Image 1 (cartoon, rainbow, N blue to C red):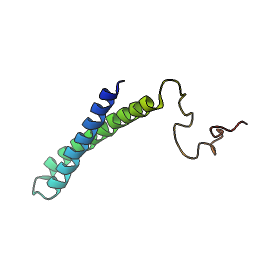
Image 2 (cartoon, helix red, strand yellow; image 1 turned 90 degrees about the vertical axis):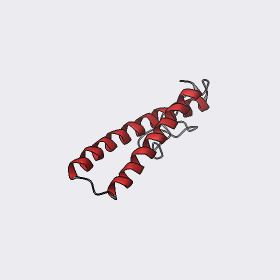
Image 3 (cartoon, rainbow, N blue to C red; image 1 turned 45 degrees about the horizontal axis):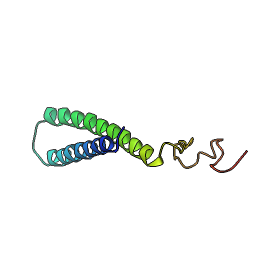
Image 4 (cartoon, helix red, strand yellow; image 1 turned 30 degrees about the horizontal axis):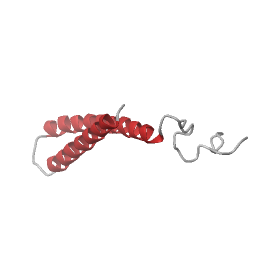
Length: 94
């Protein structure tokens, strides 16, 4: 994935989160029917989940591009505490 494509995914994720979170805030102050609020709440939840998913894909691609082709991926996935899970820390031999 190119840098441009990862930026587009991140931008789409930010836009999706902005639109649906602001819609939920606006909707909470309105006097709409319960059915309207339930339907739009479900739509918002699904859209926010998709937004988070595409944001993660874009962010991971951006991180991989910064890492470069000659550096291997971190086996811990950048998670703290991976050493406690039985994986040796980078730079240490077992």
